[in-house]
Image (tube, rainbow, N blue to C red):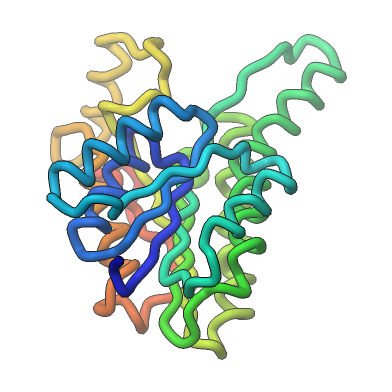
Length: 248
C-alpha cells in the first residue's frame, strides 16, 4: 500500500485513465470512479500490470450525481487520508431544445454531469482530505472560456467560480484547489465518433503549436498540481490548450 491516495472520477478511459496512470507511477494508490464497470476494471488491471504494482489502482462503480452512490465511494476510502481528489467526470449532454421542458432537461443534465458530480464527490471526501497538503483538482474545458457549448460551457464555467470559493475555504488548512482546462484533446470518447476531418483540422489550426492535445498532456498538468511542487499554487485555472485561448 502506498503512502498517498488519489481519487479520480471518470477514470475508466481517456483523460481520467491517463491521470490515474501518472499518479500511480508517482507512487499514489489510486481509486478510479465511474459508471461503467467494464471500462474501470480494464483500466485498473492494465495500469497495475504495467507498473508492476498489483492493487495500486482500484475501481468503484458509481453514478456521482447520486448522493447515495457517492457515499459508497467515501466508504471505500476506508478511513485513509485522501491526498488528491481529481474531478474529471463530465460530458456534453445533448437534448431537445425545441421546447422549454427540453431546454430545462438539457441544462439540468449538463449541470448534473459536470458540476454536481464534482461537488458531491469533493464534499463527500472533504473530511478525509489530508491536512496539510491535500489537493482538489477540477477538470474543466476550453468551452468555459470561449463558449460554443451552450449548457456544457456554462456548467464548466461554473466549476471555475466554485473552485475560487473552495480555495478560499480550504486555504487556511493548506489544501489547494485548482482547475485544469483542456483544449481540443484526441483519443477520448468526448465527441462520440462525431468528429469530422474538417472539425479536427479547424481545431488544430486554432492552436499555436499546430497539434491536438493528448490525454497525457492533461495528465501531466494534473501530476504537477497534485505533487509537492505545486504547494503554493491555488485558486488558479491552468489552460492546457496549445494556445487556442491565451492566458488572462
